[in-house]
Length: 535
Ligand code: N01
Image 1 (cartoon, protein in one colour):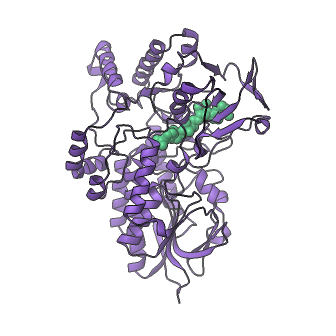
Image 2: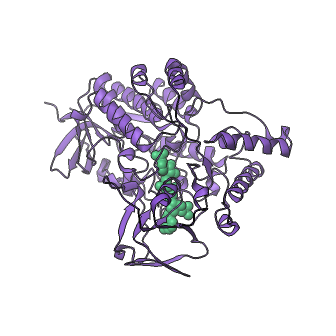
Image 3: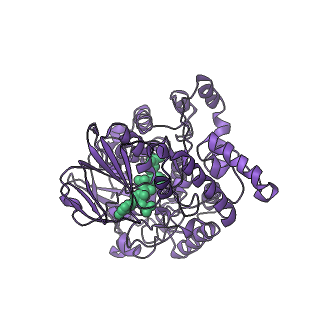
């Protein structure tokens, strides 16, 4: 008799979890069940419904699954920068089209996951009282899920409305006639601030680090563009796979072959074009050559000075770290918002928050009376949601013990001591440095091939070796260390969470990474050990 109820269990029903459910169930014919704490599919897109929420990368039609031409044909993206509402509607459509909801238990939080060595199975327990076993556990728990809430003295005594952007209510939130405070100016803050300012009586932005943000230049997609991407889909898909997640040919221009004046004209053009082009299409080495990076940084600072009328406000908004080494932000009128009379900027570096009161925020210099607090303070990114799950592996070791001082894993998907468990978008995977939906597809396909290998060879478990983890760690770091990324405190480095080990959390060369997965799969899974089936 089988010792398990399912072949595979999946935690999460965002882009990763939904695709894993479809692929494992419908392509591999496995018995699969998925769990999600939310009441519906969508993951990140279920939770992050704050005003102005949009994809912060070149999106339509690329921020989408790529594997099915039919799916591409029956979904029409409407804008170049997809809104949260559209992405969520797309994922709901995907779930319905492939009949996925029947195998997802919603409103169900997985409280425990542990590996039983004698049966080579995972057992999970839920807050609904279920206890279920499966041979494989797929953790599609989200790279940006566990919200970071600052612990300023008195913050819990604040008596007004308080929302974190990553847990935005499903009911409409009105800012009309209210004095609103936004703490945080990452993507979530910068996307929501222009929207909140439109109706709030007054908006006060509490900024710790000024940011580089580029104009998104969002616009409707034309019928012609939609037809074209549908016709060319297979080529686009191949280009995305080869070119780091997006189909664009990036410019290989060398900065030293142009005069300063010519370079400036190129920056102007790319700024006008909008999106991330200034970063990916200006010159080779923008994110690794300090001098070139400073030139681009100064160009953006110049734009901020031009846009913001009040020079004192503008000076507070000038970023002083290396351009692009925190997540680049795409905005729709962010800097322009500071020209409104109802918007104030507090520079927390000069005037830090002392404590909260029931009616507002006390900084060193001022008492700010507010009606609503918006925390746009980000996430315990990438590793946070795996640590939240805190599975128990071999010898009763919990992930929190294993990851006490470093997020060791192999290929961003497997962990030594945690057999038959895989992560989608784990630490060391390309994650946000690649198109996440395509990344989820390719990672799932690797996982599915590995599961097939185990089953076809009559094996019971597959597990990464500690040696492979150590080599992988060196590989990730050596790629990151060739760039300016590690020099900046960012969530990419785990630096936004007090006490979190500092480690670069992504693989910067997505295409190379997925080549590597193919190589490992075709080379009998180097870096993994297999155990024969025990029963
Ligand atoms: O979070 P963030 P986010 N006191 O960590 C500040 C993705 N995303 O939610 O820079 C005061 O970037 C913090 O300051 P500092 C996207 O990949 C995707 O905006 O640490 N301030 C920073 O300004 C993005 O990168 C989409 O000094 C505090 C801000 O809060 C990622 O999610 C849309 C503070 C946090 O910025 C995270 O973005 C939106 C404190 N105690 C976001 N603690 C989509 O495309 C933190 N801050 C899906």
